Image (tube, rainbow, N blue to C red; front, side, top):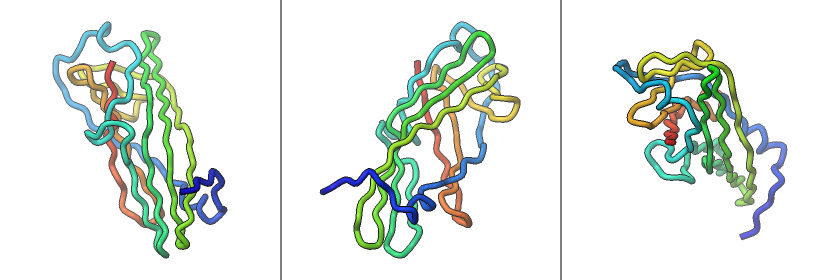
Length: 157
């Protein structure tokens, strides 16, 4: 099988997806601050070990796109800031069975507040921290009009 790193313009539009914020948290006594601070490593996506399939898109005409999360980290700092980075790969097959591969990184950062087991990022996005597992939940919309796919990214120290 020959892997082509270039992506045709038609596939580029198919590879683009929109991330919308979603999340869940729980209340409880929670960890103390010293247990919270540090760097967490991405271990699972939707309970599956890495690399894990996070999104399957079938735009039609015999084409398909699979997105895999390969690695990631999530840092919670004592100064009230957070940052994450994740590495993804996508494999696209067009209607003529041509395969294209693309790798990319996703990064974000900001400030947070902590209340019990709930970490609120930038006053909006809620992530849970239970038993040392930080769960960051994202809804992906692969193509306009298609249903959202929810992915639970699980990070551990």
